Amino acid sequence: MLSSFERVLFIREVPIFKELREEFLVRLASVMDELVFPNSHTIFTQGQEGRSLYIVVSGKVRVHIESQELVQLEQGACFGEMSLFDAEPRSASVTTLASSECLILTQQQLYEAIEETPGIAVNIIRLLSRRIRELNQKMNAIQSSIGAPPPPTRLYKPAQMR
Image (cartoon, rainbow, N blue to C red):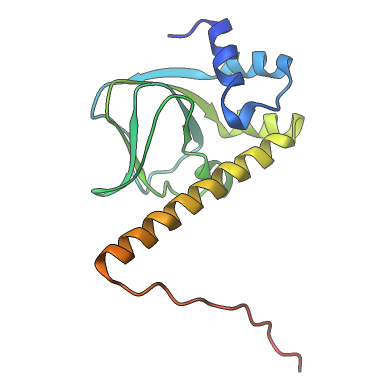
């Protein structure tokens, strides 16, 4: 478990929190819960309701849909952020690959952070965009390896005026 001081130092280095003011980092660090999960533990499953973002403090987790692995995440990486914004069920499952320690930020805590420092929203958008690009690259690589044609390109066509 991290001391209060170590928590502040740690979250200061997490990309989505880099633009937060020091006093807010201290307050945020004090309200975040810290949980330890054993190896091969499912933190959450696809379809579950989610209202928390997780930050890997130590260990390694696997993000997957059924048996298909999407990505592995290690120290400083965040997961679970999508459900904080769209109130939709979790889009994937997350399982530990080693004993893992995570900090947890709730939706309410995150909204307060965004209200105080709107730049954090931009950081989260960057994180989500980067993950979408990585998934697109993986999908393209898989399609290429099995010889499947790429998906059709769709162009936006505005409705004609009457």
